[in-house]
Amino acid sequence: MTDTDPDTDTEPDAATDGSTTDDGETDVVLIGSVDGSGGKTAVALALATLARRRGLDVGYAKPKGTRLRSRVGKTLDEDPMLARELLGTDDEVHEMEPVVYSPTFVEGAIRGMEDTDELRAQVRESFETVAADRDLLVVEGGDSLATGRAVDLADPQVAALLDAEILLVADYEEPGDVDDVLAAADDAGDRLAGVLFNRVTDAQYDDVAADVAPFLESRDVPALGVLPRRSALAGVTVDALGSELGAERLTDAGGDELVEGFLVGAMGGDAALRHMRRRKDVAVITGGDRSDVLTAAIDAGGVSCLVLTGGHRPSGAILGKAETAGVPVLLLNTDTLTAVERAEDVIHEGRTRDAETVAVMRELLSDHADVETILDLA
Image (tube, rainbow, N blue to C red; front, side, top):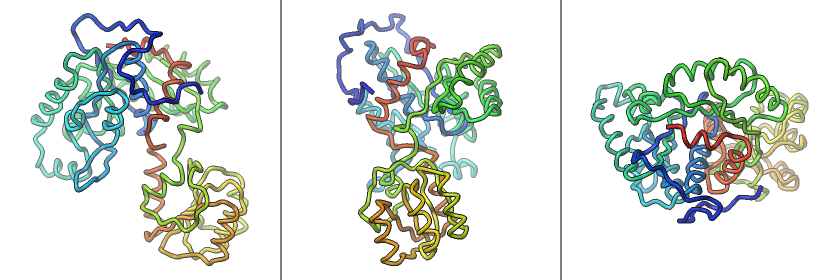
């Protein structure tokens, strides 16, 4: 990797011509997700910084904030804050993200407490503020194309409101995933710019590039890139998982280990050990009183961490064994089912976004995607 520095410079790179659009219009591209994941935040911010390096005045907006954190009693989405840092803008976060699409908000909408026309007007007004005098605005969509439909702000509706083209970001694990891409393309309609496959494994890469992409092209769905999977963009670190879950650390071991999935330790020790040895980079979630499962997980070798539920602390012997093996141990007071649901959300959302994440994605886009076409979509 050759490019890991935050893109916070204020002048175009010397290698670019510093050109900007000259039609007086702001081009708008909306980055949407086919399956609710796909890494669209990293794609959106990497595209924005690539456009900036080409001398364009670029803004970022996320009309529906869904990656929410509470700070000092105020709910914020961290993605616009990272965008401000990387793009060097002073746009107000409430303009970049006019709607906080939380469960409480949706409940209010269901009860008739939200005025759809007013919300759409608010989104449009904020867009005009952020897009003013800019060459390009990169808009990040919701968790899925359907997110926001309750208030007429699903991604295709937002695209129509802002006159944006839609770039779909999709994972690919099996041939049936093509059905989801085609369905999403139908939802995008005439505003579809194309699809960008992300996190494609080595085993699948040739099939996607040689077969899937041409097939989609034959169905009028442009394939604008096939990005290989990179471990630096997959999963979350143990430290990030523990922070998101609000877990207590019981050992000092590690923290930078990657967690890409999880196993629930509901089986006996011997069966658990056989199963765990077939997996790697996983968190094992089980009760702190299951010493047989905990021992098997530590011995398995590919387990990134243990997540103990029910507030049960294991014996000192188990903790000592984990410490010696370098296996972090996290403790939660919740039951196993709740812990699994929360861990699913964290791991599904992917690695914490930061400047390095965007830099890795920027390199992938430069090497494996038709960046020029993507940036000239509108």
